[in-house]
Every structure is written in structure tokens, then in C-alpha cells.
Length: 188
Image (cartoon, rainbow, N blue to C red; front, side, top):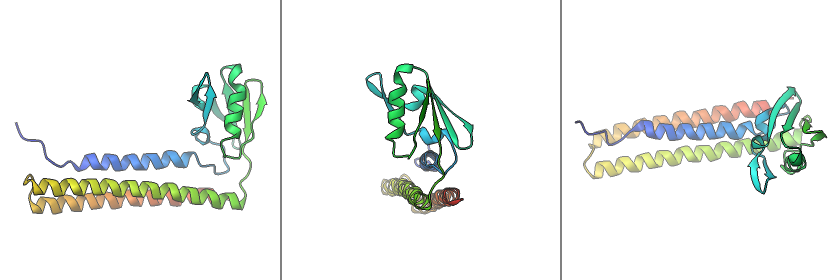
């Protein structure tokens, strides 16, 4: 039976991909002036004695481009859902219609667009840092393997170059996602 390779680049690439996925999820929650169910993803509702994600107590749909509809399944939770949406700092004001909350998406002001672009930039920087931390972990692993004579100095350099290339690729993906999100936010 052959020994498993002591260094697996794919493990580190998967972790870097996780940072990209996390960024896409965070960007999904940023309001761009168009209605999107992902806008309400971060909202937690105080229902049944605990905090639950909004999607655990209601279904979210987009009946028109500037409107989100939240259909609450239990009538007794409608007030809690309304309160959670209003206090979410998203600048949304639901209109209660029975067990449905209609949420008009107001157009963004120039100032709010600038704020959202800064938030998007902050999210991107957090994920760049995460990718660099993964690179650091990989490089430390390589250094340890060479020190323990499990890989040669040449293998260490070759793997190090591969790790750096993966890092550069993932940082470029973060930058591309940020550029796209900023364009989306700034569209008037």
C-alpha cells in the first residue's frame, strides 16, 4: 500500500473556495435597489422563545422587481417578523397584509450606495485575509514536512509555488466579485 501524499493542495484550495462562497453569500445580503430574497437571509426572528432564521417561519418571494413578499406561516409570529425586518438596519418598512408582509424596496440614495460599496469592500477584505491565512497554514505545513524530511526542498518550493498561484487566483476572484458588486450597487 502506497503512503498517502503528505501535502494535499486540494484541501487548501477547498478552504479558499469556502472563502469565495462566504463572500458571495455576504454580497447576496447587500441591497442594491432591486428586490432579492437573499436580502432577508441575515434576519433572525424572535419566535417561539428562540431566535430563528426568517426562512424557518415564513416563505420569501419576489412578486415584482421592487417588492419582496414574506408569507408568514403562523399568524401569531407576524408581529415578530415585522419587528425583525424593521430593526435589521436594511432600511426596509414592511406593510402587513394579513399573514403576508409586503416590503417595497426604495431606490437607493447616492450616499447609501457609497455606504454599501464600503461595506462590500470590507467583506471582500475579510475574505482576502481568510485566503491569505489559508496560504500561511499551507506554507507552515510545507515547512514542517520539509523539516521532518517527508518532502525535499525542491518539493517544498514546487508546492509553495502552487499554493501561491492558488492564493493569487482566489484573491483575483474576490477582487472580481467586489468589482461586479460595486458596479451593481452604483447603477442608477
